[in-house]
Image (cartoon, rainbow, N blue to C red; front, side):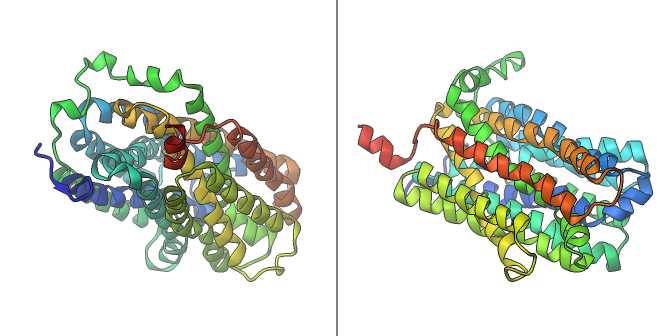
Length: 416
């Protein structure tokens, strides 16, 4: 492929492909969060308990985390043109299957959704690292996550009214699947085919070899654990249980609960590019990372321990989301502490660690709530006690971050 560049090291063909991949990332985040606004319908259709419902929704993260490894290796082995559209295709099939109203098919569909969605962020970051100069990497990654969380927010505030007034919940999934098929075709059409030297040419059975480099670096694990802990308040707390917490705990109407819960991913829309830009601008990662953690912790404490009317309705959720943008900083760090030749695998590795943690946390939190409720209704007291899990996650993330090496440009320049 001829390298198309714009001044300053930009490669236009990859930037265009990255922009189309953002549509993929937006879509997968929307369908990831959409079940939270149709919990009563899903519970009735599939006859599920609280734990069963949490498991059905959270099972997405099992294949998402596993296929993050496959996605990273596939990108390093075959390049973006073939790997990314394959992921979109799997996502489309899974979306349609989830809307067919058959329990075992829905479970398989949710697994396929996770498998396909794993290619979205890894693919977008891969394209960004090939299309943007290194000095804009954290900003590009932050903008990528911004689009994803905009999809997560839309999966709540936009999908809620749609499935409760425009189409049935099943029709929503069918139509979304058809749209995703179209996205797969578009991405294949615009993504450039890479020169052989731009990705590895090892035999298929050796395609996972780059992970040896990534996973023998202790800093890779610290990046993954730190990011994974910071994701839990949003992936499990906000995107699965946020609506129920506000509706059943704070006694807010369902429509208002959906709107308020959507503020958390909307905050990511602001926080991810903002914190990424600040990090690039000052040339340091850790100060921004810790700043985001402090904001997350303060907002979580306020949500659990203060009266619901202490703050204006949408402020805490929005601020929590903005602070949560710090979870993307370790994604830049893991790429900077590993060689360039393993870009895809580095992102795949951190995504694997992050979402394995979410995969186990989702059913665990459902069981915790059910145990605290003693088989009864989920009340504010139950949610408040369960929410201490997220306080602990943020504190542990801060402890882990203390052992991370600074990888920002300012620190690297000082070292030389």
